[in-house]
Length: 584
Ligand code: DCP
Ligand code: MG
Image 1 (cartoon, rainbow, N blue to C red):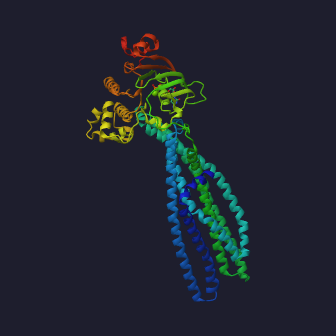
Image 2: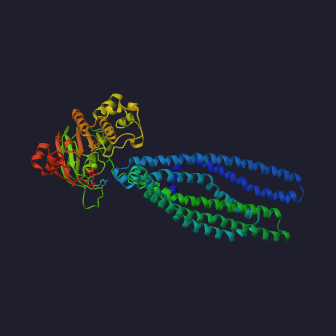
Image 3: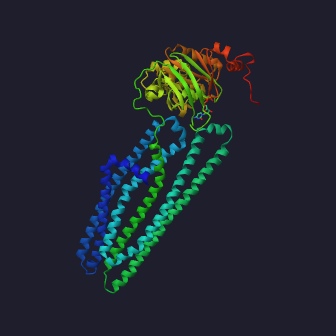
């Protein structure tokens, strides 16, 4: 229960309301505790002695107390909901904020499906627990202790009944509690799986349709869904057993009281009102115990959720800024790799990049060429320090990127990631995403440089055209060009385009590169598959399986690098074979 209790710490800012609410519950219970005594008075002193005035007077008291109880109950509900809802919202915000602060490395490990479950279902569970604690559980101590004390005060002899019942009830509760706890954990795991399958399916629903795999997906989803159902049924059935069992014990208790009490009454040692009052206190005690234990079971269910939330909240971003990290430095744009070795998984014995060395001077255009999987994206991701190197150093302007504040560094690096992800919103919003205070002229200039202006103005709404989620209503090449404009708009000192023109036709691609050429003062890294893209670069880096096999201008490489010549021949040389065609 430690995680759920930890999250209840989010009540702290609202401690006043979180205290007033349960206090009101306390008063409500106290008023309730007086009722059975009044009933006893009506029966033993009013009815038995024919004193009508006493009956009416006591009745009015009971009515007044009942009304008071309702009012305090309403107050408790009001404050309970008020606080619980805020706790839920605050936990959700904290979680969301934490996710934003995590590094690429952390995010590679947490799947989107899991994060969505945490942000929605898990957070709701925590809010529900806060509500239950403030509204129901706060009743338990007072009702149980008060009920017990009042019952014994009312009738010490019948009070012995408690001693027989209590161990049985408590024992059962603890047993069920333990078992349910573990089972609820499994429910959450299976719910995770359902969410993961759903999320993956929705993200790739077009692929599913293209490959006619809907049946397979339905089956996959069905399996996960059924497994969730089975486990939920199992645990719900277990918990459902508790109520009838408790009712049985409760009724046995009542029968016991009436049995022994009845004998005592006929023998003249006890009055009828005493038994009635005692039964009422017994009921109050047992009901609170039952409802309270239900709440505890709910809490143990929420513990699994809380654990997953706390796990994210406690995770530290893999990349931290040093305390003395340099802020507010203005970059010239020199980038250098010194003996860089990098792998995503430090235990892997085959690193993704091995012993890389090169220097890109400010303003140079550097092209990175290499087959798929060679490590091109990995290389450029090291420049804005999305990941840390295993060995060696990545330098900007002679500073190790680990010595520069991440914000300062990334602000001056414009990047179009390999997968051009856009957000729902207008085209202008998406371009301005790179620099929210950019003016309309700057947006247009960036769009022109990225060869996006012409197609944007052909839309009826031009820059105000609304994009769907992830920019679905654009073609792949259009999306790439908006992503380039987004990278350009911050007028970065270092520009990285990771295969950003792969879906653009050759002519437009050439024009984009011409436009980039005009942009002075920015060091650019162009990851490319096509050799035509790299012909004009100041420097071409040829990567092969994580190793830098050649470096130089087109002319130099044509003379010195056989790997480069091969690529050239296969794409632009005689025959233009694009070798190794797949057979149809
Ligand atoms: N890799 C990994 N974990 C990631 C990303 C990549 O383990 N989060 C691995 C897969 C490849 C290697 O790293 O074996 C290099 O991947 P890159 O994405 O750097 O490769 P490229 O960018 O060169 O390939 P492509 O041209 O397909 O984009
Ligand atoms: Mg790549």
